[in-house]
Length: 357
Image (cartoon, rainbow, N blue to C red; front, side, top):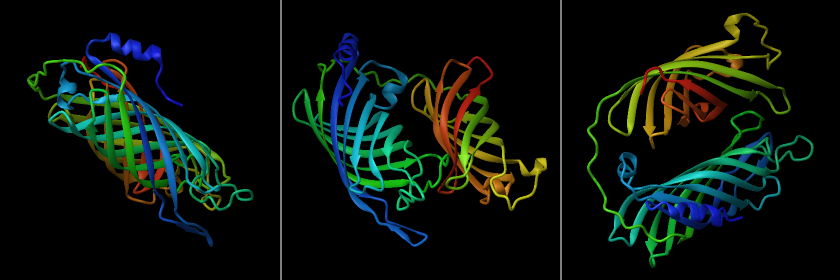
């Protein structure tokens, strides 16, 4: 499947500031490090994968285009074989962004790429039918990928690339087991420019920076599974934070959360009072502003009140995700809340930012 249509290509070409690309990236590497679980061994394995990508970038001047050296945005399709029937042959649909680190004489380019999307076609854990897969309990999982590559321009249309990548699959603990699947890879790629290179005069002058102070109020919802084959429970959370921008790209701040959950996952816990249904904490916030609309939060926090049945056995928790500004005051997004390296749940978030900016 090549995510490129003539209609979209023509639409992009009519914009005098945009260029469009198709990419083919081949990967090979090792997934996992081997798993030993209840006397069942699932060792790591060699895998092969291929990505088909369609992307575009604007050559026009603008604050974030200039800051990030005119990044490429796009969509992709991923197909892999892990050479293990217990895992399956997953595919994924995703969005990606490529950030150039530097360009060398218009021939060499060093790029950092990140992608997020939805994967499917896994063979999930089943106690009777597939007990060897102790990694993944669901057919659909989040797909998260990072890589760094070097591009070499052959001519005005064609480029070759080589790099190293990392991919993670997880379902955010909505269906256990969820040890996750991690893989490192060597990448080889070819890129074809489907539109002519746009001539432009770069404007390296950035607008004056004005420090901004912002307050966010947000509501998050998700689901969580506490043991394989068990029930799935609803989780919700409310939070508030205050951030201070340190330049055009980054914000720092402080925030607080309160979380609630339904049901009782472990019969050995008999507490039914309000103190056994919630947890709360405070965190340090860092935000990376990618475009005028898109930003990435990263939070590291500590619990004030812990509910052990809610699996808040660790004092610390983390959050990473993406947020999209719907307008000047509303935004929506998705994030993973975790305890160290173990996912707690996937948060689907709607937020409100008081004020006019």
